[in-house]
Image 1 (cartoon, rainbow, N blue to C red):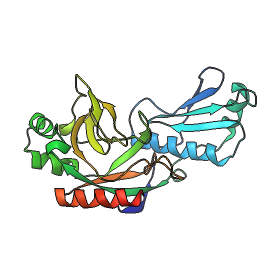
Image 2: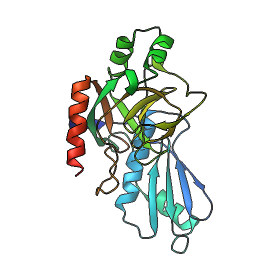
Image 3: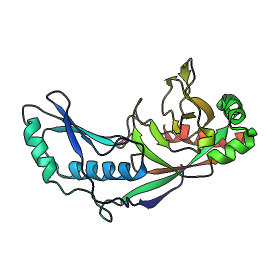
Image 4: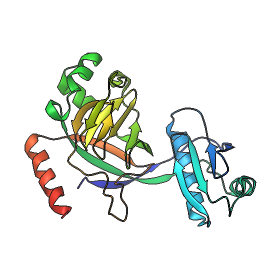
Amino acid sequence: MPSRSHVRCPDHSKKGTFRILPLGDSALTIEFGNEIDANINSRVVAFATTIVDQGWRGIYDVVPTYRSVTIHFDPLQWSSTLLTKKLKALPRPTSGQDEWQGILHEIPVLYGGEWGPDLEEVATSAGLEPAEAIALHASMPYRVYMLGFSPGFPYLGLVPERLAMPRRSTPRTTVPSGSVGIADRQTGIYPIASPGGWQLIGRTPIPLYRKSASTPSLLKPGDLVRFTSIERDEFDRLSRQNQHDDH
């Protein structure tokens, strides 16, 4: 299993406002900003946690994203007007109050080769040797801004600008589970095999999503991920270990 430790990710911004927008008659979106920013996302995660902690009946799901929280509710128990009133009455995260205590996950990755077929192209675009691109990608922790696209898929950022690469013009029909990719300033991990257009630079043997587990996703918004480069023998050992753990 990847090593984990608790980290604190404070938001040093002053008390901010948000905007509440209806999404049909059974959802609301609360917007905290309009850019990818760790401080904004810290407020998003903190406020989403506050909503969940209320234990309100008729709230089906609370989904934090990069810069907003979407709430899905039962329209027979809630109106948009009533829920908006309740949300505005909740304490808003301010500096010193919204320090999100997430988890730092160290995720081992076998970079390049058949496991990361786009690594050389990414490195060439950055003016680096493949080993230098690996070292740069693994040189910093990345924030889990949100989960989406497929179950448990973490959107992580921001990668060093030098490594930024657009998505592939022609997506692959199948990307193996565990694949680590880059898309613009984001990096992410495919938790299950699926189509995808990110630039693939490596693969992790660590399962990110177990459907039958009480907590299916290993990562959650507000966590941090640090990648560590491993060799083929370690990748195979960890793969066997995790296959054994699943049975």
